[in-house]
Image 1 (cartoon, one colour):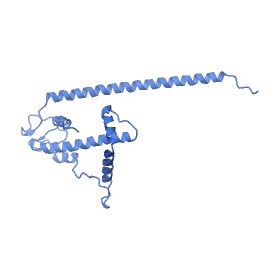
Image 2: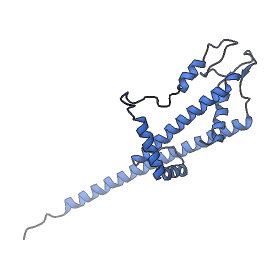
Image 3: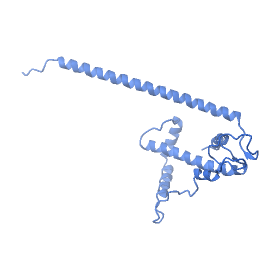
Image 4: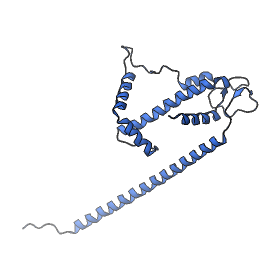
Length: 204
């Protein structure tokens, strides 16, 4: 994922969650790890759809074409096969490792940082809402960026428009299929009526 995209997502994340200033580096590190994991998981789901001959929903056509070109490359296939073998390694008879990365999950680390919402205590990564002025001024929080908020709102608006267009197209396709099925049924009935009126074949 491009650095600028990760920065944009982290700024949005920082507007919803708060933490002590000294934890910023660690929070950002865990955020990048979790985002990389989620991004990889999403791309893997798209690939599984592609392997089955299906097209993932809600994916940019150009992005999907680029991914397909990437997946068919020999070096990509080799890397994928190597990673799969590593994940399924029996580790000398110890069995398949359930956590090859060896790192603490983002959720667990978040819970480790959480403490009760008491003045003067560290605030964790749970849904704490916006910090009020009654909290210590030493607590850290990104300043709200009007340009960022406007960009995010415009992005949400575009997504909403696309979802509406997709729903309209879905309904239009459904109506078209129903009309075609109705016409096919009418044609079948018509042909059946015609055939029933024909005289039976007479033997010579």
